[in-house]
Length: 457
Image (cartoon, rainbow, N blue to C red; front, side, top):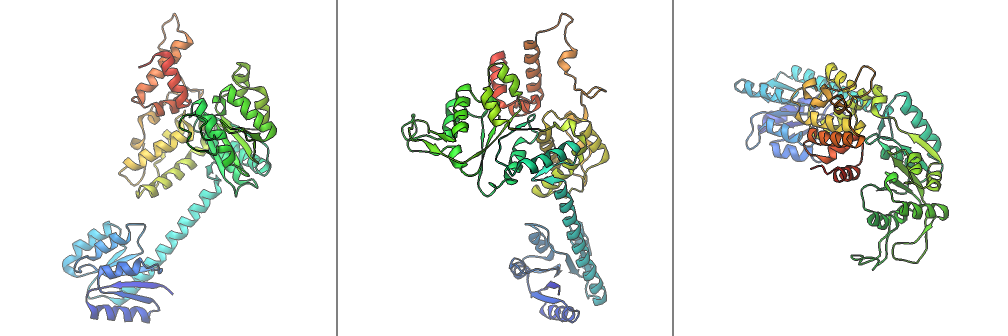
């Protein structure tokens, strides 16, 4: 049985309306003013439609509709109005009111309008449910993609996840390495415990050591009490070491010892602690080359790379871009309360044609920006950042570096090229180092080091 909320400050009219709706099989809740109607609406009872007078003291029907929709979508809302306020009723329709009826009411018309409004809302909810189901089918633990590369990776995660082996995830910045690590964690028997993350590139060596292994009171200035490290926090769960290639050799050695014995000593302490932790790691570096350069321990590489998973950059799985765009538009339209209905084909073409050096993270940021700034029903080509509209990819699909095309014939050194590339990228990003690092495919820490080394100001 459907429940209708009827609102009218004229008590006699309200009683007649309630009686007629009751005879038609509806449960009717009555309110003689908008404030009372809001109290009923917020009381938690399911309301399938609202019929409200437009002109009421203190708060009119349109204000009531707005209040009901403030924290979500209001139920089907039908306005009752006299001839003299039809203009106001038309304005209400523009704001999303379902229908308006002229007083005195034609109750046959009311019956038809009610049935239609409730059915349309039910169909809309069913469609939303189907869309969500489709999105879930294209998502794997929050990772969007149905390209061959990604479905192969999902199958690998299903196979490897339930084991306790260490996994090393390779991938460029922004490809979703942490999301993949979480998928491995949730596929494992450890999913009820914590997955604890630490970024090796985000902290100085001493801070990283203290964060990873914990410390005892008095271990260093400011250590006023004992503190657990991430290893201990992850007991019986998973520890995710992001950007492990940025870890110093000394810390690599200490981590290797832990992996060999599953025991460690907090910084400044002598008590040996034992934990049960699964190690997952990620990097955007080639660790074999880092070993050859003397910057990574071979034995540690063997320990953490029992299974290797390579996440492809977005430019190599372009068939997933449309899925990602639709997902992000829906996500940010809800977040920012925008009534967006999708994206124009020309805009999709521009997005697919761009090479996405910052991968999924860059795409996500650009879509959120477009959703916030768009004033249309659908995102158009002109809503996209200029960088998406003027890509520099050659016919073979490889991105050209503009700096190379402007070299003098005598040539330049690799160091000069790097300096010029960083300088031009910073200029394009208006000095924003986070965005510049994203475009360059390196960590912020690495960018700061290169800026200092080249003396860029």
